[in-house]
Structure formats: C-alpha cells, structure tokens
Length: 387
Image (cartoon, rainbow, N blue to C red; front, side, top):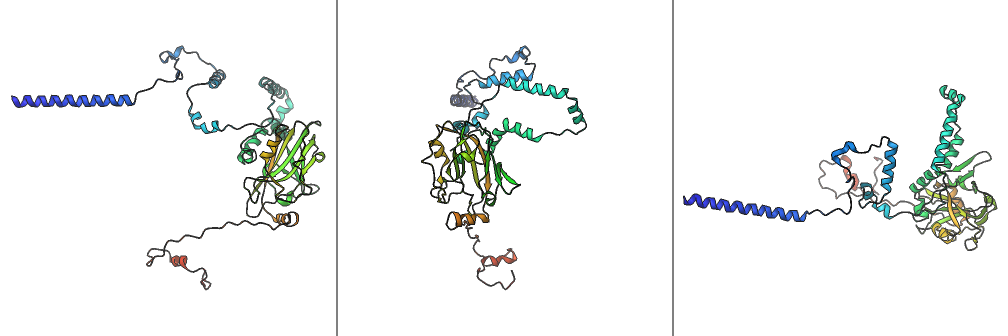
C-alpha cells in the first residue's frame, strides 16, 4: 500500500504544480495583453442591437445620404481606413493661390436645370427629332458649357499629371478659371491651337502666337511663357521665352513687353519639353523695371528664370488665373535657333550605354549556343562577311 500512496502523492503534486504553472502563465499573458479603455465613444455604441426593429427608418436614400454627410463632418477621435492610407497627403496639404470660386447657390442651379428639362419636354419638334434620330447637338455650346463648369477642374488635373504645379510653384496649386486660348499661325488659312499638353514642333512655333481670353476692359493681366525642362546647366532653373505685363483687357499687343518672344529650342537628345503659358490677373499696375530684359535678348544667362521667384516677388498684386501648355522636341529649326539667334554651338545629348556584360569564358562550353565564342571575339577582328 505504500507504493500506491507515494505514487498518488507524486501525481497530485505534479498536477498541482502543472496547474499553478499554467495559471501563472495565463495570468502573465493576460497582463501583457490587457486592453486599454477607448479614448471616446465607439461608433454605433448607442444602437441597441437587440431591438433593431425599433430603429428609425430613413425611408429614402437621400435622407440617409444627408445624415451620413453630417456625420462625416463631425470630428471623431478615431480614424477611418481611408484616413490611415492618406496620412501623408493630409500632412502635405497644398495651398490654393488661385482666384476664389464664385459659384451660384445649389438650389438656383437645380431650379434652372428643372426649368430647361420642362421646356425640352414641351418641345414637340425636339421630341420628333429625337425619335427620328435627326437631332443635332451644337458642340460649340457643349464646349462653352464645359469651360464654364467642370473644365477648369479637368485642366487642373491634367496640369497636376504633367507636374506643372510641382515644378513652377513648388506644389502650390490653382484652378485655371480663365480660359486661355493660344494659337500658332501656320499660314493664312490654318492655325495650330495649344490645348493641354498637345505636341507642337519648334518649326510650328517660330512666330509669336495669338493669345486671347475673356476679360473686362478695365482689368490688367500678365502673360508668361516658360520652359522648365530646357535649362542646359541647372535642373531647377527655367528659360523664359515671353513675358507681357500690364495687359489692358484682352489686348496682348497693347501690353508692356518685358521679354520678347523667343522660339522653342529643345536640345537634341533631351526628349519632350513642356512650354507653359501662365496668365496672371493684376490688382493694379505693376512696375516691371527690374524684370525687363533688353530687346532683343538672345542671352541664355539673362533668360534664366524661376516662376516661383517671379510670383513671390509680385504676389501681392497678381494672382494666377489661366493655364495652357504644349510639348515639343528637337527638329531642324532648333539648329537655326542656336546658330543664328543664340549665336552658339548646338548642344547634342547622347546616352552612353554601359558595355554589355559577359561572364568569364568557359574552357569547355558544353550546352552553350553555337555562337557562344562570338561574345568573346575582339570587336576589331575581321568576320569575313559571315555576319
């Protein structure tokens, strides 16, 4: 009887020790994973999940959307998944340096839209043309409506895609609310417009363009044309091609020529360059005596420019309002510009490709292709017309 008794004591001690060890381990882990009280009320905490049928029904999506928008405007102590993803974007919030947005009330726009719809429903000729598929839509009116409503925001997105705000204004942005129309005359009958990043060759842009925009007669404007990609020595600098200041109304010819027009000259081998037109609205006449360049000015050192410094210098009296730009790359007319106008040798950029790497030659190249030895042949060695 002694042996079973001792064995039972040992088993009991072992069980107690194991239980104590497990409970001690559980208590330790529970201490490490202890939950902290939330910093505030959790979302939907006030909803009784047991009585969901008693909750107030929205009965329409519009009413639900209104409540959701009001709730999203409130400040909460917790962040949504989207806010965690966009933390960097929120920190680097850009400054809007453009004109203020003067928009009609939303109710007025809805009433106007409903009025037009009622008139269209009453128009029997419009209904008949639609049914017979003979209805013609005036594209000029559609374009004018687009330029007046959502067009400036689309232009802003395109400019952000091309890095215009990043390179010219160091990240500050603006909505181009003034439609800037730029056209290069090709001959008496044809002209080439500048839109938002379309390609214009240097030979097509040799002559000063015609710039028009809608403006009051008593207003003053400044027009700028710059190239942020063409500087030959400093990657952060630009070449200014044209500046006209104190423009009365929309008469660019009557403005003050601060820097006369110089045709585009993208160097050979540097790819496409951006040539950007910026229209500034002035609050009052500005003295551009310090910014004026001699006419004609064919010195690249004198034309070294930075739009950000120019705007910061006159930011109290001017605001960016219009934007248009095109892309251009080298052609034969650039050679004439360097030799005749700039009076310098034409720079040519070429890509220096690294030599092709070949592993050390094998003495017995088993399983290699037939022309394996050609990789290690002297480039000056005669091939006797085999290749």
